[in-house]
Length: 612
Image (cartoon, rainbow, N blue to C red):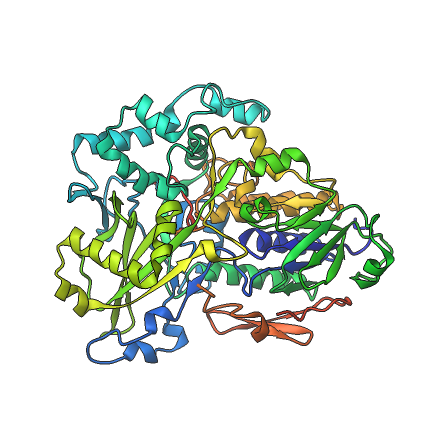
């Protein structure tokens, strides 16, 4: 039983932080939770834009779409987009909502990128398929091409999980062991040494695998860890590759988490936006001066606080424990100072994970300039490594078509340097070359573009994590481990089975919450929640950070038209409202405490949502 009401502070309001809050508030009926988010919206790398598709005149005759009601609006994903694999916590959430809301449908996706498990062997039930553009040769290969080098490359990626050197047993049984013989092997080494992939296909390997994996350089990506991810996804998922209805988008997932937090909270939760944490002291305040203590806002209870969290605006909040749910980039850059310093092993482990830029450039058209059933193209030796195509029907007279350009790391940085206008011209030229579109046809159809640069997002700074060469199983454990039963860590990069995805983020949030419930709040029985995490449809329940599968890359990549558009628009005295996609208003009352809240594949994997 709980000794007294506890107060838990969660740093970060992305998928992992929200999942942690939901879990704690559901299991512990007295615990109070404060979520501190550095940006002006909730959701992290889930971000959906409900305005872009309606801007300017989309039809040659009228602007019907611009007059559409909110109920009719379609959203475009700037962040996480694809849901890869069934049986995960994310899949369970979607299925639960589908029972109550007609809009929670999904669209099947043809997986083209090798990093996502592509190419699929057959088109989707709607006849959608993918292709591969060889930029140097000017050739567009179909997904089922018999080109010998293309077949060889796909076979090499598919055989990764079948290589036997004892890795899986080592990882599962002894986290302190190295990867046998392959610890320092890169993906480039694997393709060149093990499979003799010709140079002609290396551009396709970069566009189809590296771009999805989050790093342009195959020589930086750990082969051993990548293979471990592949095995985890295949062992703990069922085959499924989908995208949420564009009237819901991935932001609907955030809405549901917020709704569930509200239902469970009973006025025991507060969310503060534009609250950038700069200092976390978990030394029981032993070194703080009296002046600092006088500024601390603390709950009125008889327990001594164990953690002091300070934000950039000078507000100090005390808590019984703190869950750190920020991107690994924020930890690597030292934005948060910890006292005492974090264990050296944890600091070193964070450096074994990379996180590079991610960009989505989205072009809007009046008419499609690509084959009717072509859903995506992986583009070798090109400025844009991946493109996919969508259409949005508003009514019988208005249809909007888009080409989504997805870039990571070096390709993303190069595009950002050009600026949106030049980047748009570049993408249009690449489309013209691939599909033999005339300049006149392009200008008649093209409407507008938008670009979102995740590297410029000050509290995220990139897409999602990738494993560097030399990483070992122990590094993953070190990243996930709590410190002194006061600091707890979650986020996709802390997943013990396969990071990189929205599912992974959500599952680590539940894992961190469970650790808090048992170590700090001293309640038992929350293990039942793991049934929700593993899911009845998962092939094999997993306890690697609470994941049944990890597959929504945190970025195939707006603020949600549904929630938290800005801090000042929502903070109202002692409560604030969250507008959802369905028009429902959720009112969150703040805690009765003294501090101020004003402020401000075969379906193998990826990030998507990926979220890609």
